[in-house]
Image 1 (cartoon, helix red, strand yellow):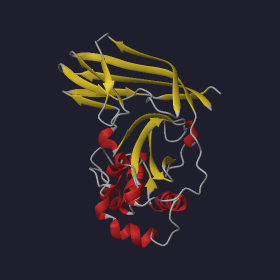
Image 2 (image 1 turned 180 degrees about the vertical axis):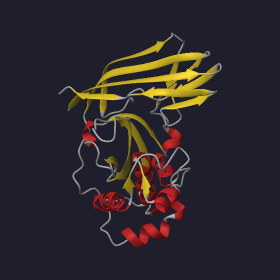
Image 3 (image 1 turned 135 degrees about the horizontal axis):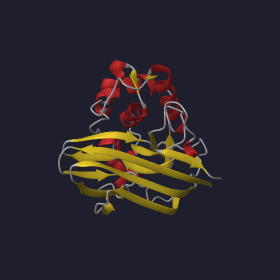
Image 4 (image 1 turned 30 degrees about the horizontal axis):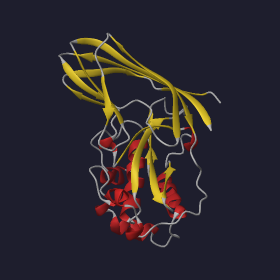
Length: 262
């Protein structure tokens, strides 16, 4: 078990009265326990809290008038990720729980239906199960260059394959797409992670459903999986944005911070 302190401050410049939905709080999840947390809004605005449609993401909504304001979140979280054995097997579709089925389907950023031939040609002969998903991650590391500034919030899996370049969000989408193309349920995970290069940011990885449980995978290998504090879970990045803004607003600063306490 790890005890981790997380902190994030988002600073915005609003040019008109605008509305916001934030997803920056540590998730309520069996693998982590929130010991303490606090949200500070400056200048003060009323924030309304709830759980989003995925059943895990903790959303907060607010309105802010014209001008500069900030949203700061900090928490201390105990993380206890159960490590996989490495022998977890893929499951037949009729063996999967009903609530897992949607994570086989194609989604906005994970166009798995367009990758079926590539996935089967590349990974069809790999032993089914944990090893096959690990092979997918290694293929992404070997074939996609990690570099900031070439992709954006509109970039999908097919774009990444064309560009052969991306960031953690793109790596995760590609891993999910390959898994789903092979009928392995997979979903997108965001969180706080400690890594030195590139500069501190929220992190994106994915998890695959093998052997009756969800297992985390990080194609970037930028941070230990067991140190991740989960924020959001969903089909892809469209379910897990750290902020959604309705209005003329510019984000001037974002500085997530992670400290491993013990």
